[in-house]
Image 1: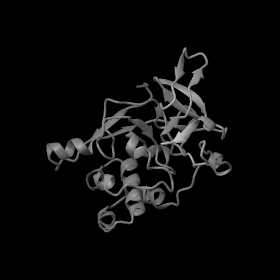
Image 2: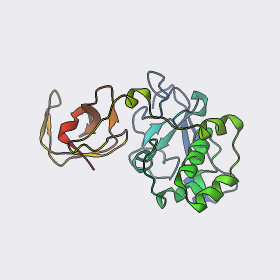
Image 3: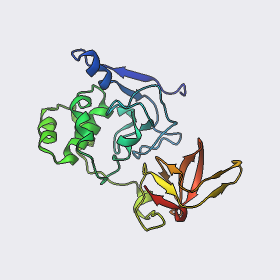
Length: 225
């Protein structure tokens, strides 16, 4: 972990040991990315030594800054399953997000605001009841209630797979042909699943990791998983 980030572990003092572990929220104090980006996308390398701040999972963890949150709110860790549903307008799995019944009580602003926002998006009676019980600082409530918008670089373009399906940050894709990775010394095989892709300025390419190596992939050779 870079020295510019300071992990902060917060535990509810009244929670049981099991619940407290589920409530651990790792918040990275520092800029969301090397360029100071705060667009709500991935930032930094995966950190597998702490659980997801939302559901407690320990796999496919990445640093994530909630869209619209100020830098002082911090950057939380989200697992691949949670992160894949955080993009504005992404479909939510109500069963999975029952985890918010615990994590919504976090004392960390990044987790509080994101949980509040997700509960509003779910449209489930239990989610609405829980949302009504939460108290947020005015500055946290302000960004949590603000309309979500995709980053400007994505508004002007549509990134689609080989079948024309829309791709978004965090999606998983499958390679439809063998791809020779120049400079990588290996071939990315057809059928390989690439999780947590990132969009860039070029709508014909996305960034993903194959065999632990970050590479750019042509969207015409990808199928949304």
